[in-house]
Amino acid sequence: MPAHAAIATGTVGTLKVERHGDHGRAVVLIPGLQGGPWVWQQTIAQLQKNHVVYVVTLAGFDGVPAPAEDGNLFDRADDSLLRLIEQHKIDKPVLIGHSLGGTLALRFAGEHPRLVSGVVAVEGLPIFPGMERVSTEQRKMMAEQMQTTMAAATLEQFKAQTLGYMQKVGVIDPQLAARYAPMNARSDIKASARYMAEDLASDLRPGLKHANVPILEISPYYAPDFSQPPMQFSEAQKVAYYQSLLVDAPNVKVVSISPARHFVMLDQPVKFQQTLDTFLKTL
Image: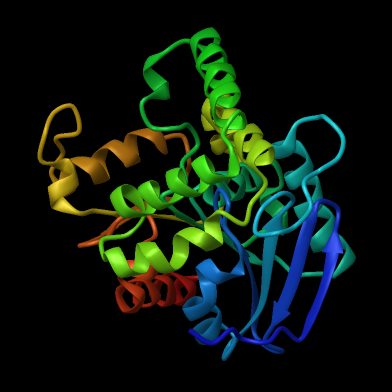
């Protein structure tokens, strides 16, 4: 797949930033855990025709150096997004985030609603699915345990885990899994573990009441993955579940795309782009 050359690249805070396109409404693309601009190549190709597209990569992912100091990585990503918008004088962009990136986009909209015109969260939620059923203390304990386990992986184990994830959760096509897993594995192991732990421990639902901008949640669905307990969901039930997690947002819509797994933009690029374009036209 050809990479689309950026007009400009740079760094803002903990983010690596690429800019594509030179006219139209601004959008900011935020990949998920271990993601980079490669997640969005087909999306960039389409959006740059009518939008100024900023593609950010979080510190520690896709070969970008991991943050040296301690401190909350979500806080620093949020602060860096704020600096990006202010420094580049970006007028009310649409934030489009995948997974962890979608979670960050929802958080940003809750904290800075006047600075954005909308959010698309691609299977990124204000709380990690299932974590709404346990206490804050239990979430923290589970997050710490997961971080310790994940951070202890060797590079070979990390690569194998990444391939397994892409094969079972990431995409439907095994060839796509084999192509993209090595790109995920370019990320820093300890930084990946820290972001994942912060995601597991956080509950951003209270802040959603301030996110008074249009929000689109894209929920991929692949029936075989949801055919057995405890993950037995119909497509409509999964949509309803995601709506329940986003109920505090004043203006949210959940749209399902199937058949697709977590990287819906790779499994269903045409349906994904049509869904995105429809939302962008309503703003």
